[in-house]
Length: 130
Image (cartoon, rainbow, N blue to C red; front, side, top):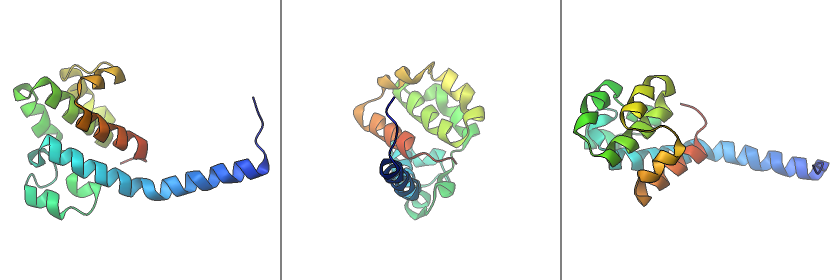
């Protein structure tokens, strides 16, 4: 395994610092897009106006009980997408949603269309915790 030179280590630290500085904004932008795709009714105030006026991920927290109640009426793709989004908010409480959506592993996200895959990928790449 190659060893890092001091210069390489400093470059990597600078890249990581820049990433961590930008990640929350990137996450919020992806989260907003995901909320729009999944339906504003399940997030924050539950209204399009709430989505439009949101300034942070906290303004668009998922309503897990409402999502759980509505899951059965959703298509397979809708269930997978909204359960995956909910898992970013609270991995423990969203476990039943993931199970009910038929998600047993990351490969099951392959059932999503390209737009929804891109949102989940952007959320994953920029996630630094809720």
